[in-house]
Image 1 (cartoon, rainbow over the protein chains, first blue to last red):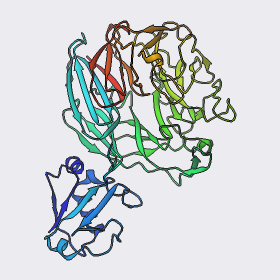
Image 2: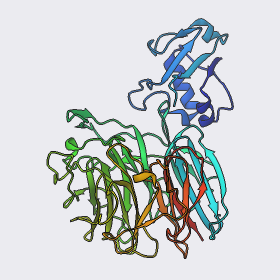
Image 3: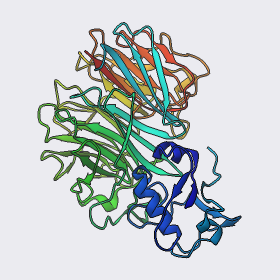
Image 4: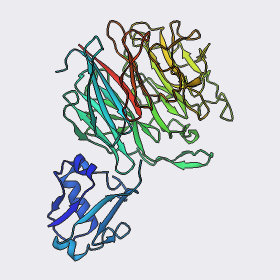
Length: 98
Length: 373
């Protein structure tokens, strides 16, 4: 089970009721996590990545296990601790004030 | 079912608010913030079903959302937020005149159909017009506007290259008027398939050819529903009037203290009574002399009177943005406007006297009013 921590605004928008646990078949990658997240919570479509290009929105970051994964390939395997559920996959809004 | 009275829909930098009152418009209930922390560029109700509300919700972090309510704002549903240009969108001019790719940024304005509750139009940045015929569950571009041929010459105003005004002719739903900063005004007579630039008579000294077909920074257009061929315009500078559906414009700034401003609106029962809020420019964008004054013309322009009762007449340096004025259609017409200082002012007597409904909201981006009967 993959644990996903979302920014507060997206928990509200998606009505996730808190952090999310996803059961994903196949290789566990950023793309697979986002695909499953958007399938489960359609209101989140377009909030993390562009609808068409699927490019990450500029003020959205992906962290796990103390590392910034934002610029990794979305098809690269996520760390074993995330796959095992020991560590969460963190989706973070960039610090940008305002 | 909506109760009798008025409902004011307020979009702010940090959420939406719904202000409700009976027809006396003396005591107000404040609901909100809805969508706290998100920018609400616009919220508007369907004239067909007043409990159907559409809201444009956006964020620099998480992009665009469209929210819809079917119970007057008690419950909301996030509907489709996919605004994809038809085909390869090409380029428009950037601030420095160089070509810049067309990119979706946000929805500035939502205009519900006058006859179908599930049909709603969206004006977006970078400028284009979209339509939904299923209550916001899907959107398609009316790309004839962007493909008008002048698109490569359109350029952004200070707020971006936005389609911010959509006016539907109540006598002919296939006729609509839109305005883009900074391209100008356009009209369709076939429901949005094809468009004509309607900028003759406009004069803009900040573009190389001041009378060019396009390039004018139109801030707002207003119409009285009983006279759809008469349009009023607040341009970047100049208040304008057209008596032939935009084919030709004439300046009616008259004795205004400055002819710059953003809002313009028409009295609900007097088609020749119009309202503006003069703002000082360039770049100051606050009321002249620190006095917040609405100006009213009862002659369709040229002759203006300052309306000051109840409005701050010293040390006031707020702005009133282009979508932030509206009128109700109560027997004694109510006029409303919101400021970047977070006040929403209301007059229940055509502007003779004003009072704040609320004083301390986030900066107000838009104000719409529903008259519920």
